[in-house]
Length: 182
Image (tube, rainbow, N blue to C red; front, side, top):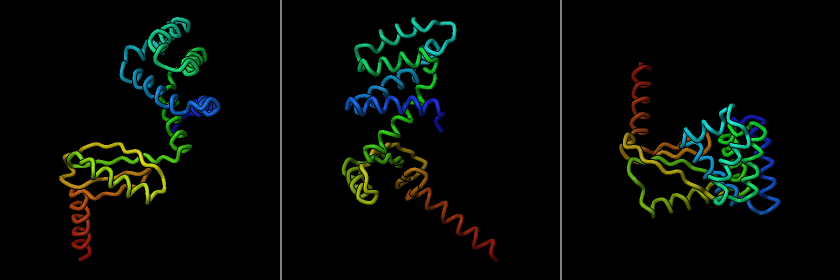
């Protein structure tokens, strides 16, 4: 769960994005910046190191992202540096994405399958879930050979397991319950 500090910064950025009609831009660019920081440990350690002064950090951010991101988002990142909150960037990103999805009526659905799903299967599943959930659906697709066959869908805290592995596990539990009942 995001801290109150991260939530407050997210809310400020979100309000700014709404006001200037740049929510889509902010979401895309915030994800680019946060991914860059998350995936480059050297960069991250420089940006949160207490002995590197704030002006140097702001210059680094400006030289790395200055031409790639909106100037308002760049100023937001510099504000995080000034306030000593740059280490909260990942939490702020997650909170921003959650707010963005809620605002745009988007449901993120995690789908694991034993093999890569075909485009027509993904499209059919998307149409079915959008109708059932009455929301736009955004998939996070992964493959997991341990499922043997079928798919496992996670929507918020609900899991729909229609994999061969899941069916075998349910069968095993029911057999064990029957044998224990005797």
